[in-house]
Image (cartoon, rainbow, N blue to C red):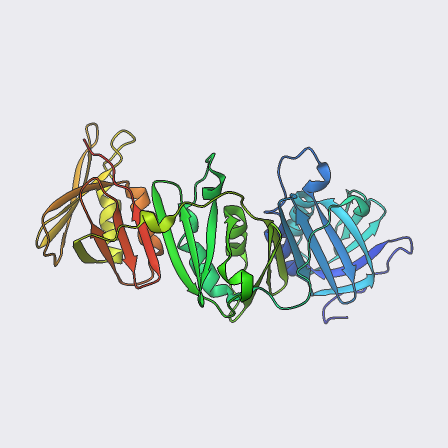
Length: 384
């Protein structure tokens, strides 16, 4: 037994007996409860399946569209078995407990959780009735990417997905492989974010040309996996599902059906008004210019002249704000309006000190570019 763990005597009638590190269990539950639906006509979907065997324990959750399988290795299995218990109640008990080690004992549809000074009994459900959560399986993945690279890509595009739309395709993120790069694209119809990340293993054969749309919630779940240096995400495409395996976590998700917009057609390629701006300075200017806008006048204006750029915002009831910035610009003067929140969203995820801003006419979208891997297209707004 691991040092510092107390030895417990288990009831011989138990179907599962396991001692588990509370911190490791809490970390797994923190991730896995984000899959558990809060409202569902099937009460068993509000539960997690716990399966102890060998030298570890698995915790699984699914909402029938998105599944998560998490391996917890800081355990001592007294008797192999499984239990299905309500996720939120279990997570609350683990969160509020002060012990280093908790003991879980399952009998039929009851799970008992014991600490040094506590004893909880949760009524669960029959493990045989819990839906099957897909495993990653054996063999080579279709592609592989570092977790750090993938999470960076998610950060730079997920915010641009549609939150509610009848066009289901834009409720997800497009994955497109080109050579040794994975291109991630998201749009809500008013803006578009595209980023490129390096692949560790590129797909071959039919998979090399395949495009898929991964749901925004699945992408968000990948973002919640704790940072781990040198970890790799293995990806497998099976029918209408994507399977993602990283460290001790396997995510299974249905893909979004439908056709993603032809994003290449949305990106302007004929602009002649180009300037380079500081990322932090521009973000600060956008935020300050938006301070005196309102719901009715929530746009800000960018006024570009040969040596200066003015960020301005106003509303009849609050007043007006102007923030100036010196620029090196050789084109014609232009005034263009943007939604400050949409502009800030992009500036927050740019990882270079400077970025390029490309503009056309006031009624055409603006384009932000960072290095060669991040691009953002933003539709203008009419300031009246």
